[in-house]
Length: 71
Image (cartoon, rainbow, N blue to C red):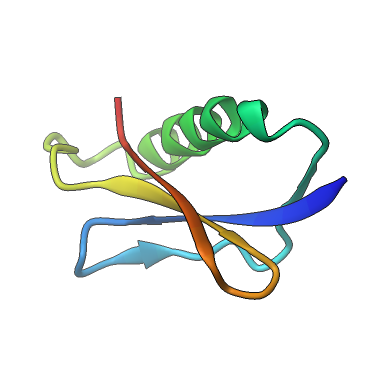
């Protein structure tokens, strides 16, 4: 099992994931990234345009392993 951090950004603003999430199966990274995107959209409900936002997934060494646009 590995721990990953899921940060959301539009290039100007960022929602950092300081704790991260343990993921056993790497195929589940996409599903978790989508969950993070939904949570950010809910918490910043006053926004209308999410086209520039994406979730970047990093392992604990800081290496980027996935970039997923908001859906």
